Image (tube, rainbow, N blue to C red):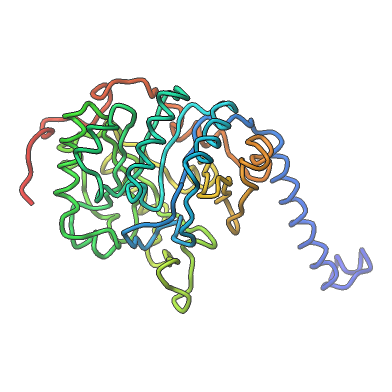
Amino acid sequence: MILSAIFGRSQSDLLAILVVSIATIAIITRQWKKLSLPTVPVSVNYHFTRECNKTCGFCFHTEKSSFVESKQNAQRGLRLLKEAGMRKINFAGGEPFLYPRFLGELCQYCKTVLHLESVSIITNGTKITPSWLQQYGEYVDVRVSCDSFNEQTNIEIGRGSGENVRKLFQISQWCRTYGIKFKLNTVVCKLNCQEDMAETVERLAPFRWKCFQVLLVEGENDAADTELDVRKRNAKNLMISDEEYEQFCSRHRHLKCFVPEPNNLMASSYLILDEYMRFLDKGPGYETASPSILEVGVAKAMEFITWDAKSFRDRGGTYDWSKKVDDESCRGKNSGKELEW
């Protein structure tokens, strides 16, 4: 009432002006961040396929397309990224090992032709074979996703088959055999946030163990129950509080390889390239995409998204990729021991 009297406006008019002002400030702030951030794509996650053989309830890169770029175009895009300053590439999906030859040839190209400092694969591990690792292992690090060492929990999450943990130990051993950096990813959610994974992680002895707080992304894993199908996910029932995530971290922070990634560090700290070679902005609000780097180039495409370089650094995005396999791992008194599952 007082403001209405002072400005000679109705309360509804003042409310409308306030809403528009807040929205304008948000847009200006977002654009300022884009202009002030560096445009060097140091590390890129290339999700060249959305297809997957698992149905994880929290997946934030769902199977909305079956498109896979040609090898020639993928290599051209990777070369453009290298010329723009990329030093590290992570191949992801979907499940990248659904295309083993395509994946292997891109890994080899990145290492032997582009001479990237680091080439990694993010995988659920179900399709990895010793023969693939023997052929292409010299070019890559392998990062396997495992959210629990309880198979029933894995099944409830949508990742389980009853053999996940056994396969994980096989992959760890194969990587040691071929001198490959073995890394681990875990999404901390409502179903596993009470689990103590420390002893088993020590036995697996990964080079790094990233633990992500489950993240809700509009347009990917926020589907209403009435909208669910094989291409969409609803992670709302899997969300946890910051306190629950911190409790999980406190049980595992003593491990040398432990790398926590809460929501405030994740959302805009990754440069994500989709199957069309477009940068995706998975920050606050609905997911948006840039034009393809094949069409407009890397620098222009990056103008369409927000990349939080500070959060990238804060989460350890520029760790020493040149370290040898055993330089920094969770090896402890239990490492190397075989487990019966």
